[in-house]
Image (cartoon, rainbow, N blue to C red; front, top):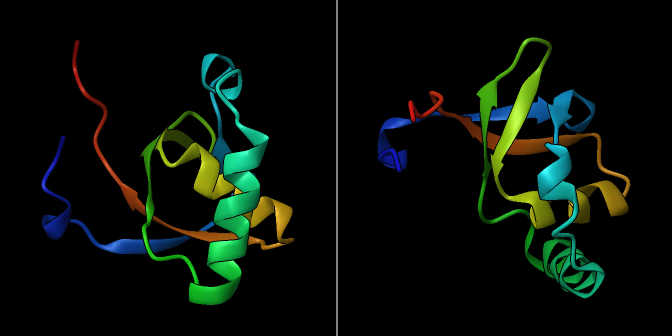
Length: 87
């Protein structure tokens, strides 16, 4: 994982963040609801991580945070733009 202290937080449109299908299957609605409640009280405390995709961004980390913000009706999310890892 990259050192996030070197990255700048960006404000990203939620609709521009693509969640890979494989990742979508891991959604836990209870966790989303709990995070949404926490975000209402404390704001988004941890940015998500994305990489640049062909169009917009591809989610790397923070699926439940993204879905909690979406559930709250937010249009944007704080995130770090990271470089894709080479396999």
